[in-house]
Image 1 (spheres, rainbow, N blue to C red):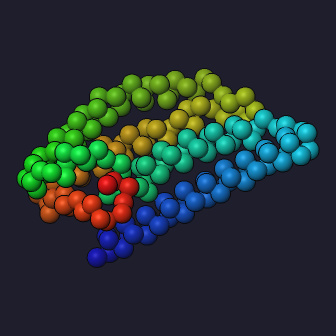
Image 2 (image 1 turned 90 degrees about the vertical axis):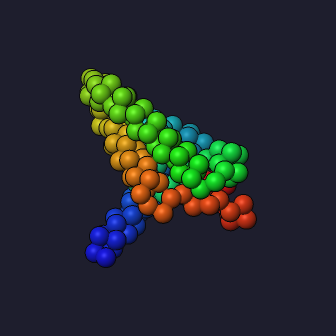
Image 3 (image 1 turned 180 degrees about the horizontal axis):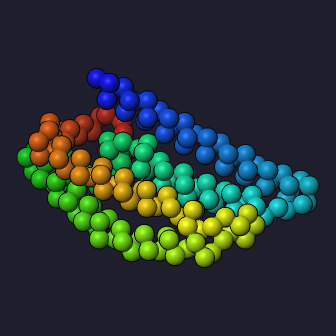
Length: 170
C-alpha cells in the first residue's frame, strides 16, 4: 500500500513539473511576442528557451506522465482478436520496443555526451544537458515496456477495448 501511495505521489509531482514547464514555455512565448511585435525589440533567448522547454516537455511527459492507456495505438486489428492474441501482440510489441531502445542506447549515450562541445547561441547551455532528457526517456521506455510485457504474460492482461469509452488509444 505504501508503494502505491509513493507511486501516486511521484506521478502527481511529475505532472506538476510538466505543468510548470508548459507554463514557463507559454510565458516565454508571450514575452517573445510582446517584445518583438509590440516593443519592436526582438530577443533571441526566448526562442531558445521555448524550444528547449518543448523538447523536455514532450520527452519528460512521455516518460513519466502519460500512462500506457493514454498512448496512441493503431487498433484496427487489435480490437477484433481474442484476449490471448492481444496478449501476444502486447508481448511482441514490448519485446520489439525494448530491443530497439536497448540497441540504440549506447549510440544515444555517445551522441549526447559528445554534444558537450556544442552550446546554445544565446544562453550558452551545453547541448549534452539539453539532450540528456532523451537518455532518461529511453531508459524509462525500456523499463515501461519490460513491465508492460511482464504484465501481459503474468498479469490480468490487456484491457478489452471499448469503442464507446473515450480515450486517446481508441
